[in-house]
Length: 268
Length: 307
Image (cartoon, rainbow over all chains, first blue to last red):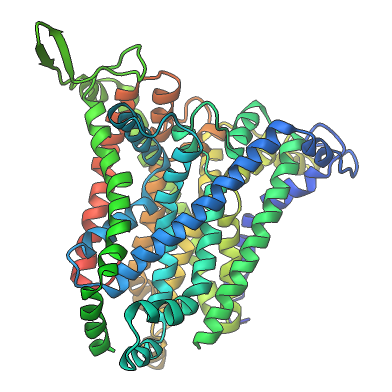
């Protein structure tokens, strides 16, 4: 570390404390014996036990994981196509408009995405008879629409910086573009695809606002469940659930981080 | 490289998969991102009703094969007349502006510090900034409830240290909203700032130093102006989503925290007034997203770079 800027480094450490102390407080108090969340009553894992017996919560969690996995796969396919189009087909007439449409969901407030998609689904249902009712399917479509934007950004970065001489060589030797893509380009961008998949997965797993708008009576996702119980007040069970989610996401992020790190290493 | 791009583009052009690659994401976004806003506009011009869905269609048969078309601009008039909407819009702007500024005050030194460290430390340090962003947003906001409430961790700590004897009322005040927003959106500012700061050419700074320029003046006259693109990009990534933020003002704010995202949510879920919520969304689209998209389009076409 650079020692020329002790003040700056102190500030950096304070910044990290600000980012991590709240998360640690949630984890520590998930092991609290006492029902009063902020009074320490001794170490206990009983809230985790209660959590595992809460069927409503487990069902919501399963639904969320299912939607998140489907969403991530869909978003990676759509996002990769968009990234390819943006990096490789610059002369296309659709290039500019695609770039804008991909970037906009990144800043669009969630209430607006949620409301607009709900109105679309309602109108489509009355005009076309599809989608019938709202639930898993409509949440999936809504999530894929905003998470593909994040995947595009990640894959775009990888495509723009990759060494194209291998593709060139293959094309010179007469390989067809499709074959070049599947045997050369795809393996090279795989780390970015995995990172994008994980990001899309966590974005979907975490979304409350959009899902609340486009969901129907049959589909309650985990964040919707957490939100309604948080509104009732802080509860140790939520702390336990939060810690488990933090664990899952941290593992996913670590894996993604290692993948991106390796990618960086092979580049340099 | 240039030559290859050209040649692969022509060979790809002949290939039908070219159309597919650009066509599928384009059609998806047109259908599920652009088209929905046409419906927002349409329904914002409808009248609310006790029906399923809760608005009246534009076209109505009045008998004998006659159809009336009724467009209702009443929702837009109400946006201007009812002070609730104006106040929540102004409230959002104020919160978004102050939070962006606070994020800059905290995020700039962090990004600068990371960019100054030895190269092998940068990626891990950056990952540490991004990690919380990947963990559940809802849970991070929830964590602050436990910290800020009257018998929460902060008040307990301050009272046991003897700094205060009465618990501070922070939860359900604007202060709590600012803390929550700065906490949640800080990574969005640090990332683009870091990306600009790390690319700055050190030669200019060395030249300035050789000519006897003091470090602080170097920063003010060289680093700061050159990092402005990052400041602007990061500020937009904070300002625009915060304008429409719902979860943070709802969970950490009080009844007097008026923000437009929360007003839209209440209008939709509590009052079941879909047309009014749509009018509000249309207004936000006009003042937030369309300027952003236009800017993005010109940026992309002027630099020839992918946005």
